[in-house]
Amino acid sequence: MKLDVVPCGFMPLSDSAVLVAAVEMGFAAGEGIDLDLRREASWSNIRDRIAIGAYPVAHMLSPMALSISAGLGPLRSPIDAPFVMNLNGNTLTARTEIAARLADLGARPDDAKGTGAALRDFARDHPLRVGVPFPHSMHLLLTRYLLEASGTDMSRVTFAVAPPAILPEMMRAGEVDAFMVGEPWGSMAVERGDATILLPGSAIWAAAPEKLLGVRRDWTDDNPDVARRLIRALYNAAKWCGAPGSASVLAEILAMQRYVNAPTEVIQRGLEGHITLNRNGDQLKVPGFVRYGKAGVNFPWRSAGMWIGAQAAPLWGLRQSEAMKIAHDAFRTDIYRQALGQIVPALPASSLKVEGTSQDGDAPESRPEAFFDGRVFAFDA
Amino acid sequence: MKDLHIVVIDPDADRAKMIVDGLGRFDAAKITVISEVIGLGRRLAELSPDIVLIDLENPGRDLLADVARDANATERPVAMFVDKSDSGMMSAALDAGVSAYVVDGLRGDRVKPVIETAIARFNAFSRLTAELEATKAALAERKTVDRAKGLLMKRRGLSEEDAYRLLRKTAMDQGKRVAEIAEALVTTADLLS
Image 1 (cartoon, chains in turn green, purple):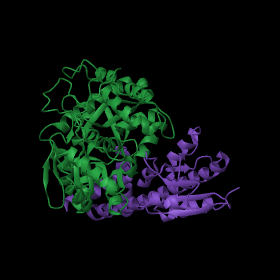
Image 2 (cartoon, rainbow over the protein chains, first blue to last red; image 1 turned 60 degrees about the horizontal axis):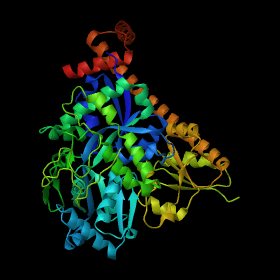
Image 3 (cartoon, chains in turn orange, blue; image 1 turned 180 degrees about the vertical axis):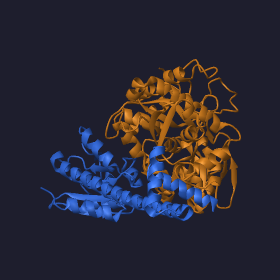
Image 4 (cartoon, rainbow over the protein chains, first blue to last red; image 1 turned 45 degrees about the horizontal axis):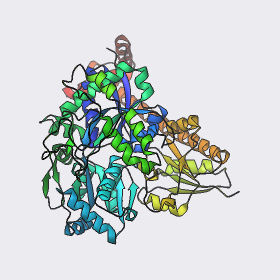
């Protein structure tokens, strides 16, 4: 059988897992797709190569789908998000001496409120410089959300950008005090001995759509069948990634040079949500540190996209209504339903939910979708 | 007219030299080469270049990305990619493996020849690299074929010419290249020895 070749750019991160598993575990081939993964050196490359059409699909930071669609890069190109690859998976990590001062101010890795307040107090006396992997990222939006909701004077905060694997080196060179990054790069900085994990990203928002399959809209229009098969392959790959018992094999695959190129053991910490916080080896178990393929994870809630649009609009110089419309139109629940309606039991009836609560109204004490400050966000279509 | 200041960010000294040589014909231009990624933002702010050229494999590209800043919004040394309207040139640049950042307000006719030169030099460098690799591969294949011939001469008592003829016939019968047959033979011999 001749396979449909689909070139796809990705960044060396643990959450390239769904794409990598689709190739290495045969889910893509099973759907008649030759997923041609190409490792990239920067998010800018992915943005430009998908915008120009060199990639029909790519591993993508959730806000990037919106910023490319809005024309914030060199070229405007409508990008859709029909599939969320994972929720969460980042760490906020600081230089060890700064982490020690924050701890004195009440920062605790299992307490986002305390850590937010400590950062606010720290920033009163010192300008706070935070590294993120891209301007249009959940890393920037979630860090800002944490700081703003904690009452930080935002004029004291600056952000700097570098690719994930470079951020620890930026911190080492004294260019930033802390950084928010996807695994394994926070754990790698801890491993090197000069960094301490302040907070898992999931502590800020427990259901943050972290990476998407970004898809050129014209490609889906021209290849609806290939697009549907690709989404089915990724759905099955994601389910495998999230299954108990997959973590050690997945870590070994991701560790390979052509993917993340980092030690298996360090990658495995994030996959299992069992984090080593500092050079003393203090541990933290974080249920939901990263979520793959569990119920509801892959569904591209339009409301989650609209949250991103609403948060990003003032930073991007867009009207809020405009950014939220772009988000609403990009998060393609319709494509997800077409691709998976046959094989997924009980797809959500609505494409919107109140963000900060779970779809089926879990008991408030479990709050698996909560923001750290307990806020909820309701959006209308 | 103010002299153009061009910064080339490239850790590969050979390629950087090729680019600088190419840009040398714009005699108004001042050219600075940076090879380090860390500290890039600060360095660029000091240099305040008009055009920045950077290869796509360089992680420093994201350091040039525009960041939402709450303070010092004017600190940005560079603004935009080439020319938003010229997607043909952008495509050629991406294919060549180079990207360019240009300060806002710089006239297109001053930018275009610089970018075109950079694209041409990047392509020339890739060609040179590819040729070098092809030469290396050919050398390696010839060594394998020589070893395979030697094996046949020793084990089957053939002359060098007959050994080669046998390799070529086998390759033709199987629809493969002589080098592949030689490779298979050498591997098998290694396994059996």
